[in-house]
Image (cartoon, rainbow, N blue to C red; front, side):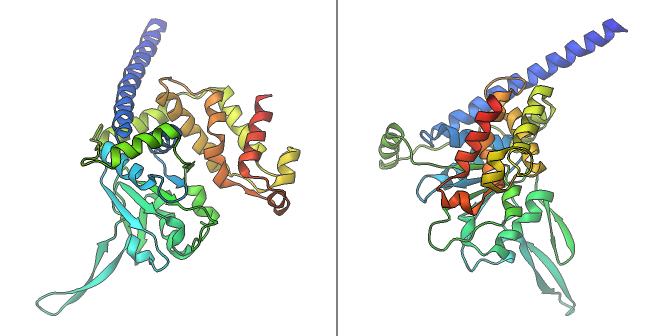
Length: 337
C-alpha cells in the first residue's frame, strides 16, 4: 500500500512538473511575441500577463500615449483570444456595452423581442479610458466581471470563456474623468501603473514605429490553452508560510487591526478579495519565473498592484502629501522585519 501511494505521488509530481514545463515554454513564447511590439515596460507586461494567467481582470493606469491600448490588442492576438474594444465616453450608455432588445415582426405581423449582444460578448474586452464614462455606465461591467454573465430584461446571458476585462484609465487629475466606484475597482485583480518608458526603450520605439513597416506579434497559444494554464496555476501548492504572509499583509492594511501607521493614514482597507487576488497572482508569478510554488517574496512584490486600488487614504494623509505607494511600501517593510 505504501509503495503504491509513493508511486502515485511520484507520478503526480511528474505530471505536475511536465505540465509546468509545458506552461513555461508557452509563457516564454508569449513573452517573445509581446516583446516584438512592446519595448521596455517589463513590469507592466508582467503584471498584465499575471492578471490574465490568473483568470482575472486588470486596470492599466497612465497618461495617454504610453501604448496601453497597443499592449491590450497585442495580448489579444498573442493569447489567441477574440477581442473587442469599447471607447468609453461621457455619453456612452449601458446598452452600448451589454447589448439591447429589439422588436422583430414576422410576415404574419407577430411581434417579438430579440436580444442583440453588445461588444461585451468577447473573450478579451478592452475598456478604453473607462473613467471617462459616467458611473452608471461603468457599473454595467460589474456583474460581468464577477459572475461572467449579464442580465438583460430579466434573462441571463452567459459570456464566452475565458472572459477578461483589460481597462485603461487616465489619471484622475485629468479633465473629464469620473472616479471608478470602489465596488468596481475591487473587481480588478491588479492595478498596473504604466509609467514613461526608459531612454533605451523610447529609442527603440522611435526607430521601429516611424518606418515603412511596423513589427507585428503573432499568436503564441490558443484560448483553450490559456484556460489550461489558468487551471494549472489554481492547482499549484501554497505553503502555510506564504498563506500567513498574505493574511498578515492584507489585514495589516486595514484600520483597526493593530497597525498604528495604518490607523493613522488609511480610511478603509482591502477586503477578502485582495487575499484571493494575492493567492492567485503569487502562484502565477512563481510560474512566470519558472518556479513550481510561490514564495513570500512573490507576495511582497505584488503588494502594490494588488492593494493600491482597494484602499483609500484619510484626508489628513492626503493633506500631508502621502501616497498609497508610501503606505504599502511601509507595510511591506514592516512585514519583512
